Structure formats: structure tokens, C-alpha cells
Length: 199
Image (cartoon, rainbow, N blue to C red):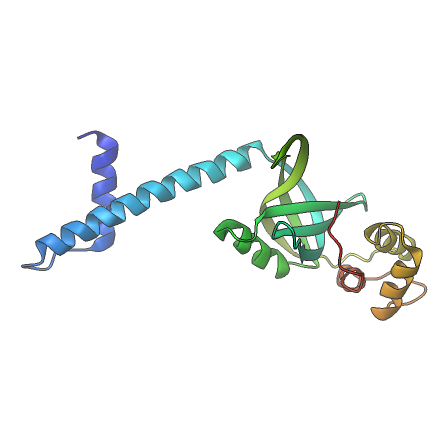
């Protein structure tokens, strides 16, 4: 037996707990199943860590989370520290990891985050790349005011240049005509834009 298998078996036995007298066969099966679970978990974690090692990191505020109907991926709109908007996609929403990332992102709208992003080949078209978010570290609510001019530019950019849609979203969110707004108010304005797949 190689040292890795012995270590994995011992970890599984510790996780299962002591063997009740007379239940050796059932206990052995529980340890075996736990060892296999730990092995596959380590493989998955290894893949996740490799993606994190390759990811670009930057700080941004999360403003919007939508699910793309065609791919089930979450589409996140983040505002970088320079004030530019960027669209990121999660893994597919019909996978455990993708669904967990979408749920986590929805709870972090209006927060300043450390974003870990990969550029990955698009399925079916290796010549195009998708900006995929692989991890989000929460740094708490973004309480810095967003200047009125910049905020309106962000809403217009999110509306893909549709001035009327941007104006309606701004009014529907009840934002002031003049003066700075909060990140949450800006996020609210984006939520009033017509739903559309991000580029």
C-alpha cells in the first residue's frame, strides 16, 4: 500500500468514527465510501486551486447578477476601481459550482470584492474567450459615493447605449437628478434595465 492510500484510509476511518462491535462489515464499507469521497474531493479542490493560481485578481464592486437563459451561466456586472463596468460569467448554473457562485454573488450586490477572473476558451469556439469568475472575496459593503456623472455613464453603458432605457432605469430606481449615489442605488438602477444577455 502506498503512503497516500494509507493516509486517505486513516482520514476516512477518523471521519467515520470507531467501529461498533459486530458491525465490522458495515463500518468497513463506510470507511471505503468516505475514502473515495475524500479522494474525489481532493481532485476537485486541486482543480479549483489550479484555476485560482491562474486567475487575474482585481478589486471591484458588484452591481448586478443575472442568469443567461441560453447557457444558465450567471452574468455579473462589476464596477472596477477606475469606474469601468466589466461583465463576468460564472460556470454553468446547472452545475453545483456555478449555482453556488450565482447564489453567493446575489448576496454580495453592492459589496466591494476581490475578484478572481480567468479568460477561458468559449465552448464551441476556441478562438473566443469568456471572462469567468472563479472566486469572490467579500470586503464588505461599498460605502464610497459614486459621482452622478460617472453613475449615469455606468447605467448608460449597462444599457448598451440605449439612452431612453438608461433614463427610465434611473427614474424607476428613484435616483436624484443631481448629486452622488451609493453603490446600492447604482445597483438598483441596473436592476431596472431590460433583461438582456451581456456581451
